[in-house]
Image (tube, rainbow, N blue to C red; front, top):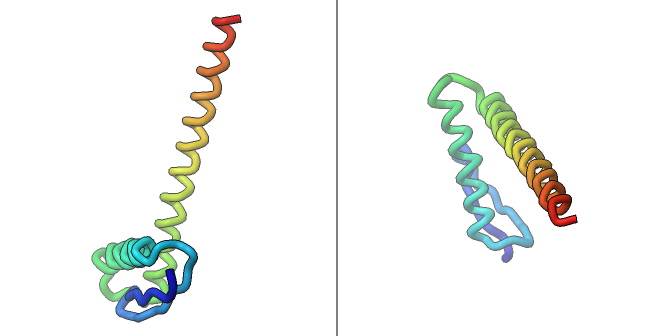
Length: 88
């Protein structure tokens, strides 16, 4: 776990992290794919704007997953409480 060189939007970056190098590469590839999706829909878009739109898409995915996780956690808690009451 040291410096990892990645390429995003044709630019090379050295990333340091306390996670495995492969994980950092996977993150960079994910971000690069998201930006490529924006370019496939709007090929003449400025790189900064494409990066911002990709970031917003990633943030949207994250928020949706977090909301779903919270909903599932609440459902599990409610079902657990129901089961506990059955045994009381």
